[in-house]
Image (cartoon, rainbow, N blue to C red; front, side, top):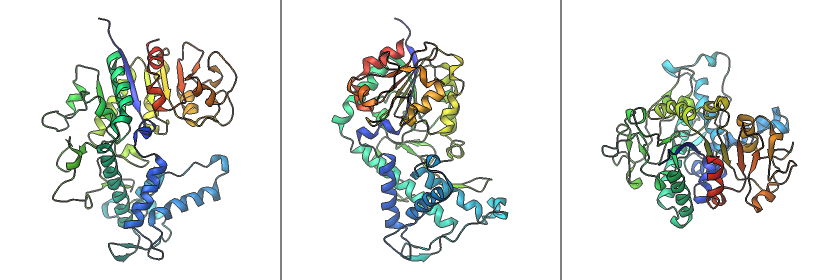
Amino acid sequence: MSRKKKILVVVGAGASIDFGMPSVTEINKLFIKWAKDEFPLASNQDDNLYSFFEREIERYKRDHLAGHLRTCTNFEEVLYNMYLMPAFYPNGVFTSSIGAFLGVRKLPDIRYLGWHRTTDSHVLGRLAEYLIESLLKEFRKRCQEVDKNKTAQWNDFLTKLDEDFELAIVSLNYDNLVYQALSSLNTGFDPVAKLFKPEMIWQRKSWRCLLHLHGSVHFDFWEGLRWIDDLAKTYNPDLGEARGRSSINTKEGAVFPSSEIVAGYGKLSRLSSQPFRTYYAELDRLVHECEGVLFLGYGFADNHLDQAFSNFRNDPRRPVVVIDKANGDTMTIRSSYDVSPTAKSAVRLFCKDPLSMKWLDNDFSERVERLNEIDEFESSNDPNIPLSIWYGGMQKACCNYEKIKHILTS
């Protein structure tokens, strides 16, 4: 029996949206709703503190950045600003010296638990904590209610991958869609005791593993690092909500909520604790040892992950496949305008030269609608830097498994 090729699979949020998980845009809307319920402004209870932050960030970008330099504000950026704000307030032994030079403008007062409150670092910490815990509960709810008919293609796709290759999967998602399909993969959690044991990752004999780099709906950190199978029983029954968890205070003055999921920019501050530290350390070995990479719905927006692939082309001929979902009027990467940000980042990281990319041997730009109609990739014509980009989304990719397999085995 021939040895299976080692393939590293990186799963991003774009892989789960088609199967019922919330998009970045939807999460932002959920945050607005939740903040309106719990953190309304005292001056206008139809408004809320989260929306205030979002508006002010957008206004600052309009005032100080040219249009082509502006990025869309997302929930992770808003959360990160909340994490950083405590650095500008006195905070005991965690007080940052940056307060000697910079200060915080007056923030709007809020209504909190029926009381009028001045917005300070404690309120900001409570808001961030509340939003993250609400998000975790939302993902747990959706994972329990997932449409099995929708995920059947996904499960079949991953099962075929696991049969044809030796898989190591790094998931950046909080959901359990990968685990539902491949529950036998090593997560570092003891299957009997349900406790995290880093040696299960370090000393494993099989290459197969599933690393939840940004957390999981199955994590429960109330009493140690536990894996909970029943998502309806993940919260500590004595405490109910997660308010009152200890926060992670940094020497730089930022304060990060303690949670089973890593949300918001500044993720490296959370990755220093377990189980994330073991996962992140293992990532280097996976990148070094793999014989090909498959990116599913990842937009190359996490610098700490992208850096792990900075030397990937030292072994040049390893194939890279990127599954993206782009609007039909998006142009192929050879174009100088209206290209997919995901494709642009993938070429920069793995290929360098967008002019080496072709589709069906055509070396002219085309709308990706054309490629999606005929279920084709845009691929590098240089055999030393094999890169293939699919623009049709995850569901269509699941229906074209054999094409993906062919590229990975080439």
